[in-house]
Structure formats: C-alpha cells, structure tokens
Length: 173
Image (cartoon, rainbow, N blue to C red):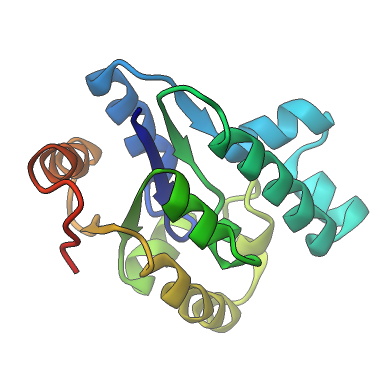
C-alpha cells in the first residue's frame, strides 16, 4: 500500500506537486483542505472566521485521521498547520511516507503574499516568519525532505519519485 503524505508551509507546492505525483504514480490525489471544504460546505477562511482556528484544527485532525485510515493508495496534501497540531505528524508517519516540501521563508513569502484563500497569509511578514519557525520542527519529523526552492514542480516530483523508489525507508536529512 502506498500512502504518500505531503507536508510543508503554505506555498511549498504540496497541491501542485501532489497532482503531478498522482498522475505519474497513477494513484488518487487527495487535498485535505478540499475535503474539509467539501464536507463542511464552508471555505477555509469561513471556518476560521465563524468557528475559530481551534475548531478548524479539530475538524482538520478528524478528516486527517479518517483519510489516513483509508485502505487505499493515495497522495495526500495537508494544510500548512496540520503537522503542528497535537500528534498529527506522528499519525502521518505511522500511516504513510511523509515528505516535507521545504523552502526558505523568503521564497515562501513571495509565493503566498496577497493570497486571499489562505487565512494566515494575511498576517504580517514578521508574524508569518514566527509561524514558519514554530512549524519547522514538526515538518522536519517527515521521513524525507525535498528542497523546492528554485525548482519546477516537475523537478520536485522527480526527486520524490527517486526517493520513494530508490531509498525507501532512508531519510535524506
């Protein structure tokens, strides 16, 4: 069974790379944020606004655990904060191959600036950097780390494919 879970900060390329990886491996791509929106009938910003971040994180965790328990192959893109909540990262590592899509803060900041679909992207640059640094230790628990800065999504995908096919079980950190 192949369950690949992509983790990383907003703008690291989880959805983009996940879709390409899905095509190359011929296994379904699942986006945790999309699953939440589909099941609640609310956008992520609406959930944050109406219910608050804690309620969102609980919802997110419940859908994450449900996805991880599926008896199927898939590639799952998580939200940027998913790995940093409770023991989510441990659950991810127990259930599949976790891959941290890394990029330095400045690269990510350029990618997400002004994105209205990301509730936390409206934070100041200083606050975002603090959030990034707070989440980094959780992301680093992933089995593999792939640096995405300065690479095309195809290059990142090919790097992931060589990691999971060539070095299964070995971390490259």
